Image (cartoon, rainbow, N blue to C red; front, top):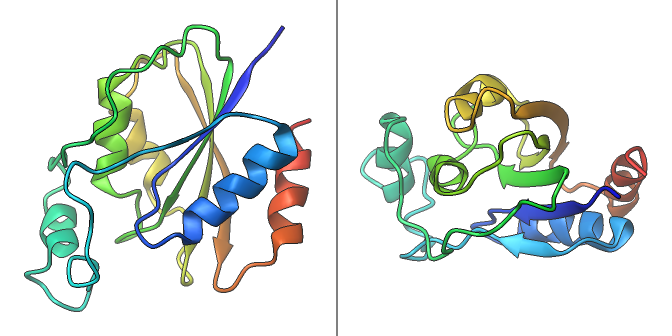
Amino acid sequence: MSKTITICFSASGVTKRAAKLIADTLNTELIEIMPETPYTKEDLNWRDKSSRTSLEMSDKSTRPEIQNEKLDFSGVDTVFLGFPIWWYVAPTIVNSFLEANDFSGKKIVLFATSGGSDFGKTVQFLKNSVSADTVIEEGKVFTGRFEDADVVRFAKEYI
């Protein structure tokens, strides 16, 4: 019997809203990637080249510390993984989470929220943080003020 879970990183709550809709639609557990030091509004100011996120994303090898301890995903087959798009990729904290856990043999379906960007090189960027036998599938980017029905429709494609 296959098991699916939903995981998300959400700095402002937008991605968490989408993740909760997916988790509720698919009746899965929802795990939130929690930064050791929460992001402030100032940290998220992408127009400020010295803001925390600007510095993290200018060096893609940055791995922000996370609160989540290593988790056991041995009974899981499919992971819905959500995050906001930052600088055309997933935030580096998502790499921190992937590298801290074993997703060998799993299928990871990505979903993201964005003001207007697509996935860009996200899959390529995340593949470096998982084992070679982990499948990462580009799912859907929800842009702007997305509708709940769009998220539910996306989740139902996998039932």
